[in-house]
Image 1 (cartoon, rainbow, N blue to C red):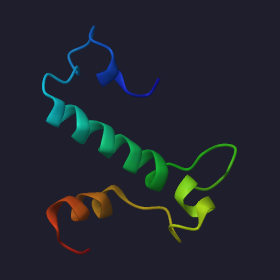
Image 2: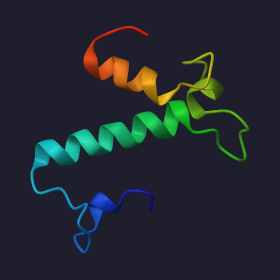
Image 3: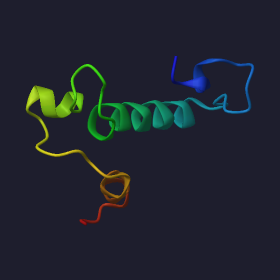
Image 4: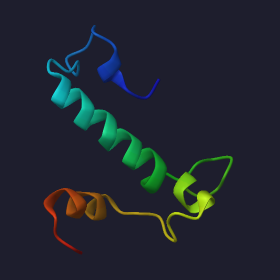
Length: 69
């Protein structure tokens, strides 16, 4: 429900499969590492033991750029 790229009725609809895959990957990265969930009170990555802190968006961008923070 959070991804408007799955519905064709909006301007955010992905026209190429590459753009769609990148948008879905970015959405899942933000959902699992940056967003604190109401019921968990932490991110899903922290709950699973994959991450030890809530990630900033700049850390996700640094992964895309190949640079470190």
